[in-house]
Image (cartoon, rainbow, N blue to C red):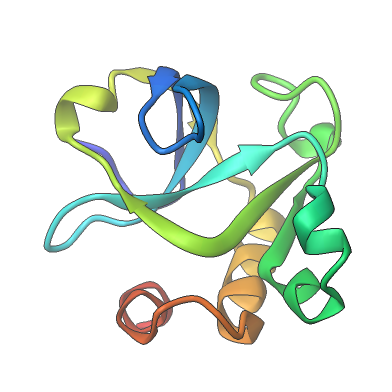
Length: 123
């Protein structure tokens, strides 16, 4: 069973649009079921063009996560996605305490993340 702050590789992530692609996901909470965020190698153009969304991005530094990252990356906290336990089989590591703190700050400051997700992550 996955635990909070674990990182998993998803070879065909169903939450990517327009087609499934490989992604790393961080589990943000597990009750009542696993939910998490996707890791991106950079902040996407949509977010960069909307400064009010920048607080939703949490830096995940490669220096603390070199076992699964090749470069500094960003956790996009605008949307929490549900994951089936069967999707969470390719464990890659665990977020550092500093990265966990950055994610909690991004979750707290993100103006578009649904309240139910904020409550479950921040409690």
